[in-house]
Image 1: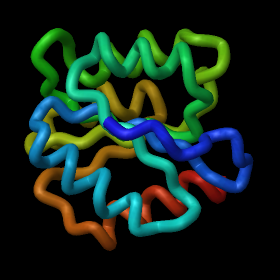
Image 2: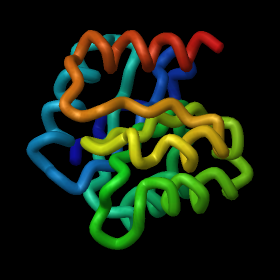
Image 3: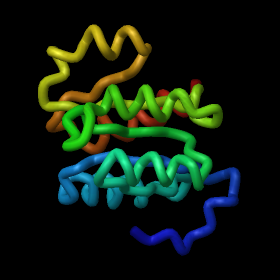
Image 4: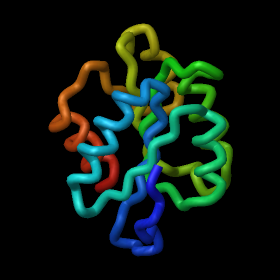
Length: 131
């Protein structure tokens, strides 16, 4: 994961993608890095995501629901409990979102059903960041 770009520039929106399928995560990271206003970090484990969230100011979270060590909702709850992340917009991705509706609604989270196209992802990100 390259972190040589400066993330101090407030014009950049830092997006943390948590996806344990590295191929899917890399595709998302590449697509988001095409947008000059986004700086994207990829974490492939919840532990890595928690470490990154402690060290970098994050503007948005995109979390896969099915992670190896915990669910995406459990990770969201842990991240959301952190002072700096309590109001960070979050998207939960899953191939079976219909089964997760109640959990998402309880937390006022937006879900994206996999597979999704990049335009849908970009529109959802821009919608959440503009609120």
